Length: 182
Image: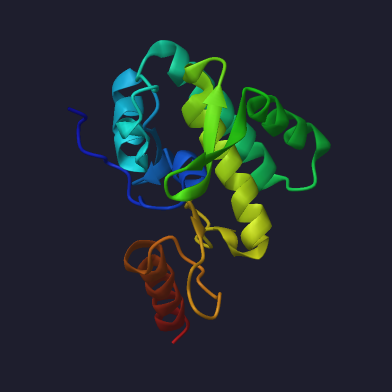
């Protein structure tokens, strides 16, 4: 049984959820993926823990970290060819096989090495987000926050990973600045 997830933002698409395994808490950087226990927590939280092909072992951790680094590079530098090449290296470890099942057409991810599975699925999910709405992939607007989210708000103007945390910090900061000026 995996431990509880300590991250402040969960439930994002799997690509951004993988990026959000690093966060800042009280000014200090945190990283869920420092070992296989953290990997087990992330696999469970992201919904990948139910896939019996994936194990929370050292090899899967290594490949998932490689995928996270590649995703961070393309998110931070969208037009960077070297960053795109790193993500493509991750994507080279899997493929989608089209199938016809009892419910109709379907797709199934295949991996020569299942330890690449979670990272590959995160990279593939990022491509899906880019195809769907690239302008909705956002970094939190708070200068001390490193979290990312997919903006699903109706008008597409979400700025904060969490209005209760980062949005409130920004409001408090603006209030303090106004009161200091007075």
